[in-house]
Image (cartoon, rainbow, N blue to C red):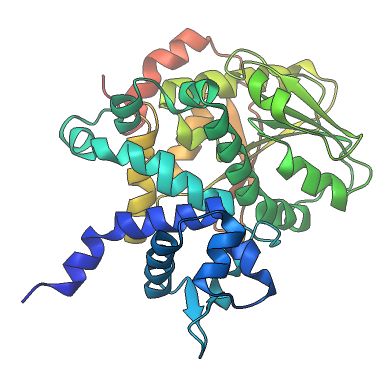
Amino acid sequence: MINDRLMRLAAGGCFARALAAAARLDLAGVLAGGFLSHGELADRTGSHPEVLLRLLQTLALAGVLERDEHGRFGLAASCAALRGDHPRSVRNLCILLAETYDDAFAALPETVRTGESGFRQVFGSSLYEHLEREPEAGRVFDAAMAELARPVAAELADRHDFSAVCRVIDVGGGDGTLLAGLLARHPQLEGICVDRPSVCQRAVSPLARLLFHPADIFAAVPAGGDRYLLKNVLHDWPPEDCLRLLTAVRTAMRGGDRAARLLVLEPMIEAESDGPHALFQLVLCETGTRGFTEPELRKLLDRAGFEVLARDQLPSGHHLLECAPAPTADRPTDHATHHLTDQLPGSTT
């Protein structure tokens, strides 16, 4: 007899792709008004009726859709976040995970064997180089990162004291969603979002107080901020790149005339259940990238010349470390880089 549990795991890619197809077709949005037959859904989405029926049945089996007494399809209440207009929408995140990221996992056996990036094996480039070449992939990625940032912005606005802060600089801040959330809650703030030129070009500022600054964040970031943010940035890069980025931030902080602070927000690798997230980093990011435990992140910050002043944990699970340049932080960067891989796990040297 076939092992049903193993078959469901093996067929997981089918369900993931079905979910991405539903998100692409905006089935959740079409179903916002209630149950519809597969023929009606085919008409409204421009789909092949027979194939769409099989897609809908697959999604119903997965619990994304449900059927009424007339056999019509509706969106399960638990999956309302598949709608693009949902306040906690994950529509674009589902597309990113089930398409681009899933494609990279085709090289998982090679990553397991060698430790090298699966994404580079499949696409012939890094993730961010791929996003530069493929505008649609870049658009979906930006939107997915915005979906991840919205709830964190609300949590950070509640948990950190911004009352005496005037300017916040978000380094690697994508389309500015995190900053926009903070500025909406704290009217005295102005924000600068620093990211790749192509990201800044695609972004549209929702507030006059939010500006975009295109830059190579590994080389230099703007001075003059009261708070610098690094959210979900460090775990995407190998230690030597993290050190270059943090050095650029520390230089900017020392170049200002304020007592600036760096806020690092990172999910940590702490439990067995964090294994899949760590595996994603190994496959999708550059070779040598690893997720962090909190002691490892603190060690990295120390090597970059920061001291941790305070620690918090947000409801999202992100660890929040408030940092300042250490009094003895003016260390030669080359010396720090030389010793960094001796002190952090995952070194390939």
